[in-house]
Length: 71
Image (tube, rainbow, N blue to C red):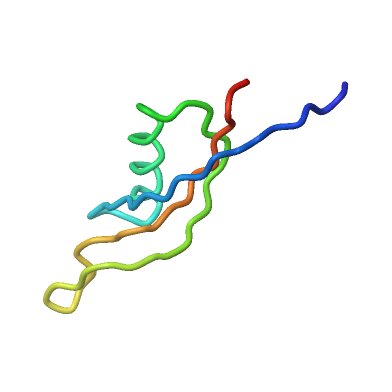
């Protein structure tokens, strides 16, 4: 089966969660997929969070999304 050539666009977004890094990533991808078609991959560029009273209160991830440009 021949592999076709693709052209990709990239978008950078930030996801957040009070639960986990994983949930912050999933939230970002799910919400972006509502308006961006053909998302094929993601890359986490940065992980950060907010500390309250000595404990992690919030997770944030900066995510790059790769999406196929349609013909």
